[in-house]
Length: 291
Image (cartoon, rainbow, N blue to C red; front, side):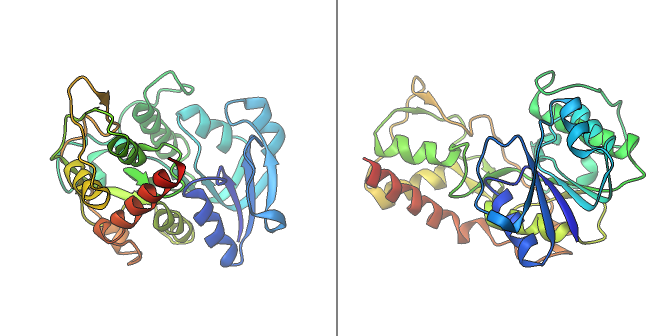
């Protein structure tokens, strides 16, 4: 397969590209060129700025790929800039579970239908992240419905390469005895593991599945569970104070995604409880080394 990846040089994009390469695919990575990657001569590269129509047209106009995997489109205009310039047999869009109202368990894909609602053609920053992704999906479903497309809806993604440092926040502040304001100690929510998610997207790109699909680890986790494990491993008790620094998962309420569609395609997504403690161990060890 001849595959174009928009983004792919960091976080779960790395195991995704590695999986494509191990499958024998020809991979081209399109980025702004500001981040180095470790793929060497195994990939081709295109430099472009997805926010700039002229840049996208210059880089992609007239090109054809079997598959385009887009990790970077945050709004409807991003989709438009891509699909007005490149042709492909299949388009895989990295969306977000934030397209849903994340306020209950077992959320199914039809709870947000991108075929419904008006497309708002907008650029990044004009809407919230979640609304931008909703409009990106609407653009695919309504304006480019002649393309074989899929939107991957994932919640928080965790892993050693997580540049958001959301999970690391709890480790750092417990070990440094920094007071934290946490408003959802017992809320339970779902997460994805970076390597599993990356490999799943690579697999998904070559299936016949179309439309939106939920993707994350099995099971759920809570902030209390995270803090109790950090205290158990480190011997340091978390400092909680409403005047402390606000925690990144604040506001998250009980939620989980229905994974029936994902499970029909793969059994490679593990339970969160099989890997989150090992990730916390990694962060604890890292912070102690850096202390």
